[in-house]
Image (tube, rainbow, N blue to C red; front, side):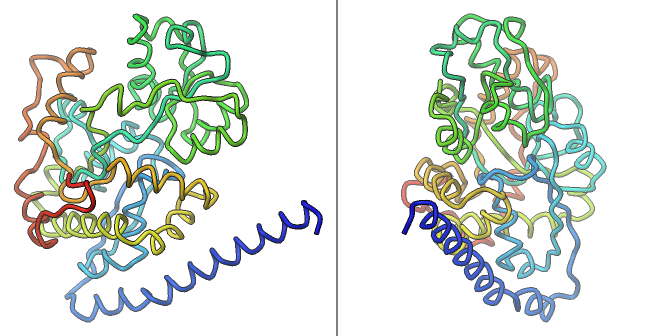
Length: 354
């Protein structure tokens, strides 16, 4: 059989296998919402924001919780809304107005956002800073075009680019930051439109596959090992009004992350469908995220990480020193503890226990 024909056959077989897997998951869990409605007085509607459109693998716990009926089991009717960056105006407005639970950080709270984090989805940074072939060191980024996707100036990629530049004694004024949709991160690097960008594991895999000269300049979790990556938060007004449903969302998400760690074969099809990425790339990302304990197993919260991130924000001028928030102003510790207790208490999976 010719190479091209074999490739088509294997590709077709892979798509068929994925379709069968998705159908099996749907059949297995299709009665979950109905079962939940049987014991629920009502299915409470909640919107959950995701910081990237389409999401990266690390962002998929909410999709897993919905697809496997975990939300429904806790009488939650979850609608997922995708935003262009965790610090985007739309994302923060949705939280401020009590319309959604979404990713928030201490910087936003210091700037007046009346909200608290209720669950740490992924305490550790999953990304690597990837650069074009000619860039060999951080100093080589001087004068280059760097990504500012996910919120432009002040957004995640801009912040990560700033941190990498700092290692060479450079500032954001020494490079040109280019804003675009989050979906443009990988294509922009491959096409040579940008020279540096923070990429998630699946996109690192795809970038090296598509253009082997692209390479990782620095693993961001090693550059900033105490940085708190992603936590879900909710407006104080929503907490006061709908605390029970917020707690049940947190319970559902803790359970979803534990299933992710323990049942790869069950969650990979959901992740492929949500991210729209090839299964080999999703598998690569999943293995990296599990090995490095990126997803939380418990509440995901860490006073050390949160306080380090606050101090880093002050050092960089993102947080005014006189408006420095305390750990308890950022995190609803009590709600997290209640959700963890309802999810069978703290545990460890492998070496992961955040």
